[in-house]
Image (cartoon, rainbow, N blue to C red; front, side, top):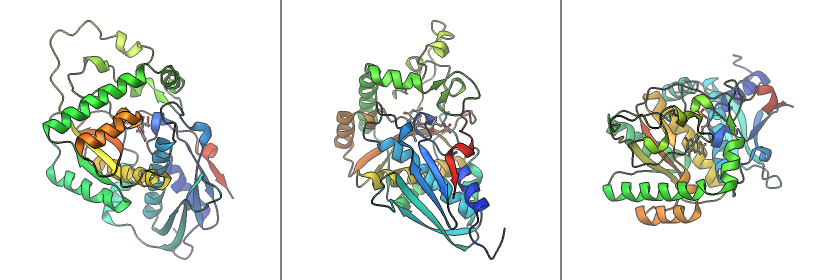
Length: 333
Ligand SMILES: Cc1cc2nc3c(=O)[nH]c(=O)nc-3n(C[C@H](O)[C@H](O)[C@H](O)COP(=O)(O)O)c2cc1C
């Protein structure tokens, strides 16, 4: 590392590569990066916008917000201090962020822990054990998302849990009967283990969602029934009930900036959880169906707008998805 030259293209490129490991809806990776002398610019790639599940582009922006957070963190890991400007170009709404390197400065211990979590983090669609999340971790997660303008609401009371579960099932039913939703999910399903985008077979749980002993309906990624075919009909004894920690990530506003902030908060939340040995799976169906989203806010008395619903816990999986080659998403000046 050069102590005299805060920004150079190698540093910015390394950060952009780290950003590609952010989570994104259906692993669509709806982003593009441009490297300039002193800055890394992040753009939305709306050719990868999932119009059926995400007609407003909200989840595309949340995904990009997570990538912005990962890029920012990676630059901190390379001992760069930076300024982050969201939506810097009013004439170009696809220009989501400019990360400008302003100085050399060592990362904090927490930042170093989060950086280590980037290659380890993954979406876990398997069973979580019943060990409760440590109270101090939940407290830290609730406080930490505030740094990005978001809030986190654990779903703890029985009434809140039932309302969330009912709205999740209702939203999931609504999506499952929408041919455009199903066709889009099929388009983003991958059967080649080396696929560089989309949801690969190995990321889909082999336990059919309908056979899980859980009040929370997970999204059914088994679009062709291949994962399901191995297990249906051989359930000898009922599986033990799952009791994941469920929470809602939200923001005071519901515009493009709020979605980016929700994505940055999501990026932080997932890495902070990973560094504490905790895995997560988004269950975003109720925030995708407008009526369910409104009713979720009303039922739980949320102040602001729910952006993500997540289950968290202790899992036993590992990363399973891949990313497109850096050269296809990173442009040098
Ligand atoms: C906005 C958003 C919504 C998501 N919704 C779901 C969901 O409802 N169910 C699910 O299993 N995963 C969901 N995911 C996780 C993505 O499918 C996952 O991040 C992507 O496939 C990449 O895999 P990885 O997280 O293991 O790296 C969502 C992610 C984002 C950013």
